[in-house]
Image (cartoon, rainbow over all chains, first blue to last red; front, side, top):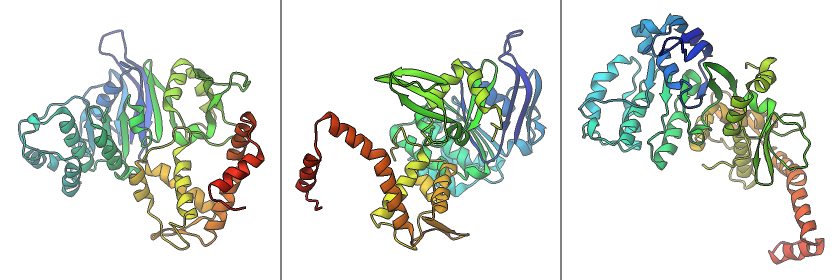
Length: 282
Length: 121
């Protein structure tokens, strides 16, 4: 669906943010796009949605360059930015004006989600709180029924019950027919929804694997101080170490701890890429 | 739904299904909720949920009728019970024995505690 090839992009000359970045995004996956602050997650989403243009290399959506912003591409793509401005009008008027850009827009779904989120459709969007505006945009994004859905920190600003509602709405979103990219630091809000981990670091994608293949290859376990099992990465915890080890055939599957994995890959990218090199892309 | 942090989600979904079967909440030939319903209820990606369905189908606990849904097999209760027994012996008993050892809690202590709770031999 999205093919990024040898993409280079710089905000300042001679200081490229992305250097020969490659990434393929496929239908049926829900990507968690992770990276340190300033790694360029938001910039990457802007490049995919055609809001920024690459300096060199390609960013193709269904073989059409994103920078051309073709109507057939844009009508099948929705980006929910972290920060956005909404016009001074109520939700219903906004839907009237914006929905026609999306041929498969589902009016029933947006009213259902707005009801669940308790969005006041009588008020001007500008009068709503940040969290409520965000929820309105989430409702719009899901109702647009696009096959490429990009969301930048979607759970920021959501209250506690809304986060759970958000997960239910995403789980119900026909993920098998879409490509969803969620950029986030809120690992715990979203780790049950993401099924592929994509890590952006130092200008390129240093890791991109399904959760299934991660749990097939790695074990996340607590080791006692006298344990001699060799580890790929570990952190000290009370009474021992929390470690990532190569999975042995006798091991049970363990829960993939995204925080530990993230720290491990950032610090030792080579050890992890070696593990997934042979037939790693699944 | 709150997940236990140490166990993969699909295994926790399997645990939930097995509990439903052990408590007879789900019985032979019952149609169980769809992958989609389970995914929404548990707030997980349907890809994760489907792994639980597939695994239990392979073990003979569930069977699938194309286009209709997943059903509880007539051997489900026995299979789940056997599976739970293995898990109990392999995973839970060693912890119990270790604690008993550390706390000087004898088999006799265990027996009387068992009876005190109203269980019979």
